[in-house]
Image (tube, rainbow, N blue to C red; front, top):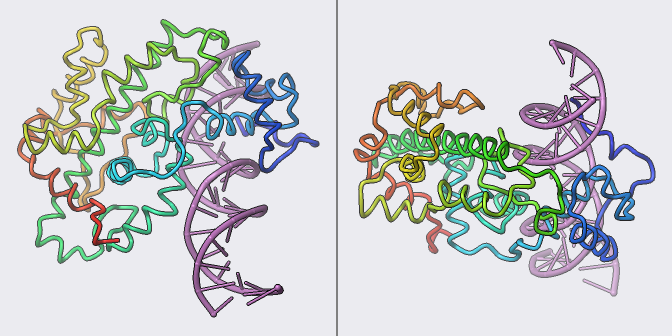
Length: 312
DNA sequence: AATCTCGTCAACCGCCTTATC
DNA sequence: CGATAAGGCGGTTGACGAGAT
């Protein structure tokens, strides 16, 4: 409870990291893993708080970080995911391997948000500001459907988190040196529920990603064009996996309930709060039918928020 | 050349959740 | 079961550089 007092200690350095500090941190983690961030600085010979070390590692020094400009695909993914998830940067980051939540957040705030504003789109709601004009194009309805999708995505992420927690109970090894150089994976977990996902083994990571998070939104777009789009395609892939019994039951809960509570009168989605997500889904039975009916929607929403060149 | 303005992004802050005792 | 520690997240800040004046 309460915030960590570690940074309040006097004599701890703040501000930009020097090369020497980076080297110390890297060397220590490569040899020992990070283990407890709290005790790491002292062991590594750094006059920093553990929090600062963790941040430096996760946002900068981690070996799997891709730096530099975001490509168009990444930009689109961010915009689309933001429309679905809002400012859940860590959740968005799980869909962009090698990008950190901090980097995505910065990029959103400095680039993408401004673009949307220029396009006349509210970057918070992803609604066009001139609703009357857009309603004639059917986009108000689309916004409502988008909200439903947001619920699906939130529910899916929640489910992933639960899967991770269960997996962790079975497989988690606390010994940091058992990981690859103490490397901390950011898994494809929802951030607001599973905040301690460190130490997942690579295999587990692959299982998670392969079963739940591998379908990109561009792929979803393709799916919507070519086949019946069935909500979160990743949710369906999980249904087919017999080992995910708990998830099957979760999905069946979805399917057994009604879709009444998805979107409020203004087209906003209800929040998918932790542990309430599934219960809040009380709407329209089979999600596949729902999305099948609206399979053209994705095309419109993707083209709606596509950063097409002339707009910039 | 000096100053100002603006954009970028690394890092910090404060709050929340989870784990542990 | 409550208190505390630790980790994680999102919001915000501020240093820095580039371009404009």
